[in-house]
Image (cartoon, rainbow, N blue to C red; front, side, top):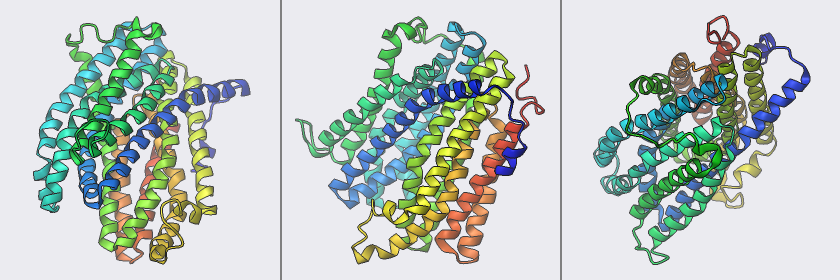
Length: 467
């Protein structure tokens, strides 16, 4: 990565412009990062509450969450097209009301179009889980959860579209406010519906699904009120004549968003595959992997938010036809994202036992094998952090240029050909077990990151920044 950056044609500009870009990127990224953390906290709260019910309920909930999340991530990728499209429109004309409104509406149409078949599939989740050989009783419980939580899919996608809208307007603090209230609402409603508190019925796992769906609705309604009532946003009249078709923009959302959706799907499924591979080794490896990946996932929220900010900042410069601004926006985000992940890598190397002790009691002898494995995984995770941050921000930079198709191919090759191939070869062929699988994950991410950065460097020669 260092060699690539050394060879990169980073645009020259006075230091003041770089400082201004860093300030603008951080101002935009910070609320996005905190919003991502809030969403992660909502999921963590659900896991804790289900764990209080019992291990069997938690296991069924985990099955349900995994199948629901796979469809949710795909839908999220599709509607993420709204962010670079609106950023480019606002960059070209800061008062572009009609074009921004068209993008918001047709992104919502796309969300409806993808949700309807997904609802039909999720309604039959019990049959899907049985086909994958899951325990019949767990599959039945998980299906009851999914049949409730699936109705939160569409309002959550609507929330993401409105979050992209306020972010493109460079007012992302509102999504943080709504996300923060959702954390509290989710904890209260799920606690009440799971355990029968606050005068609500005790529905257990079904209550968790209903509560999570209501939390998604809460987030959408909150954002809808913001964009309808706030003076800065209401002049766009986003919901006016919502039924009016705009097939040109609708196709544009799918053209840009479908590759993003597939890319995210490829990434989430390779991590699902890693869990399966760890389970083939032994229970200790699976538990250690869960700890290491949770630590990595938490720190990933930062470059994820920076990558989202990069999409908007690059998109605004792209819309202005500002070549130097595109370069500054991209490289500033890349430096911030990889810089943070380098710091996290150093922390993982310096304090692995401390980090693992957050999840397991180090004084319990029964935890010793898992702790030893988790510590060894964290050393590989340190490298994993840097390349994961690089690919996340790199993807965001390219999305700002509305370049999504070839990055999708990079993800397919990097994750599923190279990454999985190395994981299988080292983990099972050379019997490196869990360490081999983690090296495979890191290798796949490194390949994807390198390809993303090289494409960014060559953006002008490839015609990505031409008009």
